[in-house]
Image 1 (tube, rainbow, N blue to C red):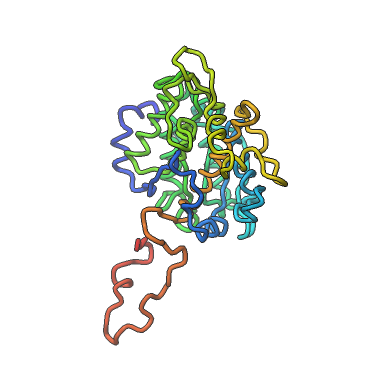
Image 2: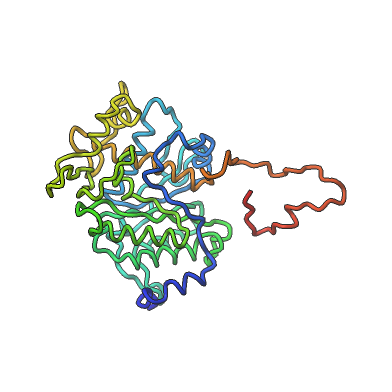
Length: 354
């Protein structure tokens, strides 16, 4: 029953772990698609094979992806297939592809895996990845419904347990040839403002991911700020982007409507509301809002998840012009007798960062 003593031993256990992800966070600062070099969108389509489980709130990512795919100005740039085995011209993402539990909230049930207590969704993930038919899967993403009241310690323990099994250097047999990247995620706004039933667990997840260098899709942060970086969580923000504008204790405004009113000719307006033959974003679960304006919520999450995919494919926005296909032989004709520095310093199982 290892999880029972999680709260007192987690830091000791993790300090002894040999498996750590190269972490980053995708949040409200990650919705500008023009920042992503096109070659990294292509690389994501070529390399990623994603399984994503969710219920209604998690479908907001899918609705946003569909909006980008259908927007005529983008052509086929953001094309995707609901399959984990698509071709290189489409992103491969199997929507609700992991059999068993539907999402993290429903899967917040302790399960005994050979003496280690993990969440039931993690057991379903283990069984899925343990099947060699799924060796091509290299990204796992789960979403919350309502995060309030759930066991975040169990969630974090279960995620690290899966990483230690299946990520690069992991203990499972498939990890050496078929490693998997796991994406942590926060939950939607619950309407109580800062430190409410969603903000408190979201803060715990953010702190953990910062401390342990994890990959985080900050679902909540994408609701907390509009694209002009105005902050709304301290105004009784709802999951449909309604908020209390006058501190009356009642919601009376919607930040999506206000943003779209300010930018009626902008790309986000067109993606949300339509532009000629493109009729706008489809119904956004829990977030259609006044005149469908709150569908901007889904559009922004669709943008952010493509930012996530580019990062997972290897794009680093902090490095100038990273090459997705670097020259494998930078010095094809070294001087006779000159040692090959790459071969000398990097073994067959090493990772070289240039």
